[in-house]
Image: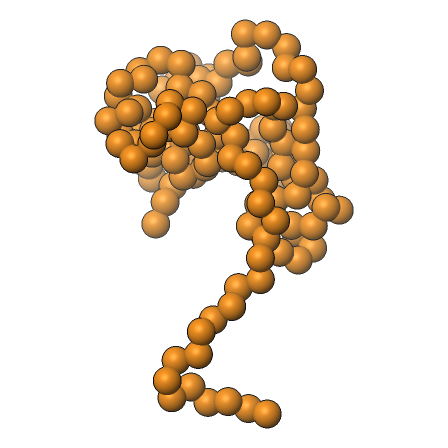
Length: 134
């Protein structure tokens, strides 16, 4: 369905990584706009993991791509962020998405980060002919 960008951020042989949830397009703005024509504002171009991948044209062919000396580059913000906030994962119910596990981090006031919305239990409408057990 969609691609997302994960960055391995630990030593070789250890499981560690980070899902890039959003970003600010600072170069190639017109190209990013052409890839995300439904974005109403520039802050929405890479707002969310799949939108970030679409704006940067990240696909399966980039699996395993290096960040050092490669096609992609992550740079720190030009100024130290006022604060880094954290909270539960978006759209994940149960233990993995609870406040006990603040696995989502973002810069305070960053407009490209999608707003937190608590997970809602999925409900499925009964189709005609579905069996009902009482």
